[in-house]
Length: 177
Image (cartoon, rainbow, N blue to C red; front, side):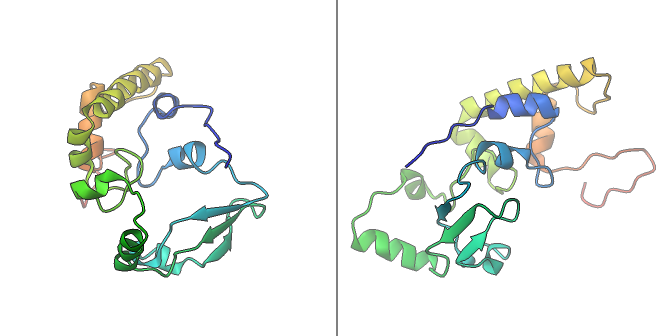
């Protein structure tokens, strides 16, 4: 097993990008978790049952960004019940967050997660770190002469976790406000 540590933290990435990651701009995945595995097979726990997008995946795939990297999704066709049956039958250790009711575990406050308010309550230090990073992102953006629709890191954070979309101009129609 090789452990690859990213060169930058989430907090540095937020400051550099001037914003937190969103469902449309997930710059964090590329930098923080998808960098290793060139000229190797990366074994994952991706399963078809997890999402519509994942249901289209194959058990063995080349990375769409670099064909030198391949994925082996060895339990891709397992159901959630089959995963838990295997864990119980073999008395395997697992993350205790599942016992707290979490169904999927990933990055804390990931924009792809629909339960970010719960995560913020569970890990208040991360929430504070996001707000501090957003404060720094706002300062850096203003230093670059960029306009910003948020007054503070807290204001920016509240908008981000609410999944609201900002109007770009007064005449713009926003469907999901």
